[in-house]
Image 1 (cartoon, rainbow, N blue to C red):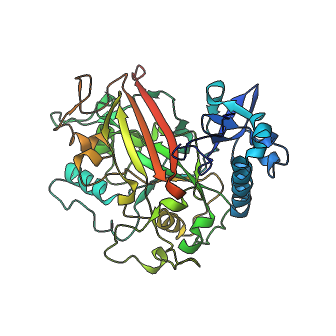
Image 2 (cartoon, rainbow, N blue to C red):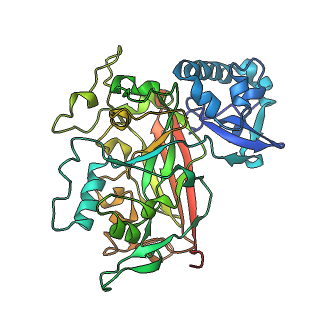
Image 3 (tube, one colour):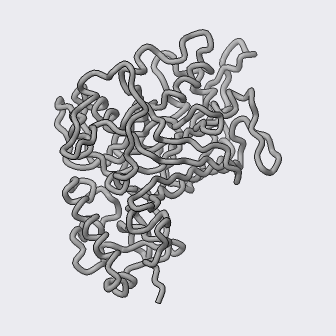
Length: 408
């Protein structure tokens, strides 16, 4: 008899993945693990090793347990799901995805957004600073980032209200106030931090960074480019970024992505020692890339397919740099990779780049023409990575629809 656990090897949510999420069902909110098109209510499974943490309405307690617990949980889950003799028992604890409501999977603490794609940084430099060098002098020496606003991180499916603010059209002598007319996306990867908090004044070395990296989510950093262009000198992003950031519902663990690790595309000049680290016992370098393929869907048309493997800086380098001044990290802290862009036009991870600041419009499948987002537009990010033995690791979807600005 076919069961919910009889999934093809290339199913994006098969036993090689097992991402975590938080769901509502029957009046309770708790942690679940996705298996195919179902959610496994893990805290209710007999013998669940971390039932108390999984019964919480957030991943927060589980994140705090640290890597040994995360790995033990994965070992237990995998053994159960691949054991066909356990399927009848596990089926009692499965809930169809269509019957649940997903919630924000963890309480977001400090949020940092990086700028780790060389191609994206080059494109934006050429657009915003056409008479200067595309890359700033520091870009290849350190992962550039800014401290974002954790309180406006929302779950996939949440509508995004068009922000208002100051902008200065090139034809106007002074700034004007009103709704953004250059509303954009940024296709990113978000990293969820867990484990023991670090102590103030004590950096997390790159060789220990993986102990704190629990998993990843899809991330869309909505960006009001006209607000950003006027405000970002000299201190960087502010209101053009802080109004909303959307993340996916499923946290794919770093352990699930082990087969997706790839070498970085090459760093020249060589980073300073604190950004290099040493190889682990298996010979894997402390700094690595991830082979994750994205697609950006604009109103039903896939307009770009960026590749995360092209990113210049590693997540471990980002975490090490984020703490090198002694700043702390805690479970639930979160950082974004920055926009993922490649060398070709169909690999650009923002509409600023895709339309080259509006000079090269995008034609969608329905014949409509776009440069930036219009009210009613829906953007969906999807991504997947290779798993072991030809399997596929799905990252799910990250969806948002633009709604008109509130009256100002």
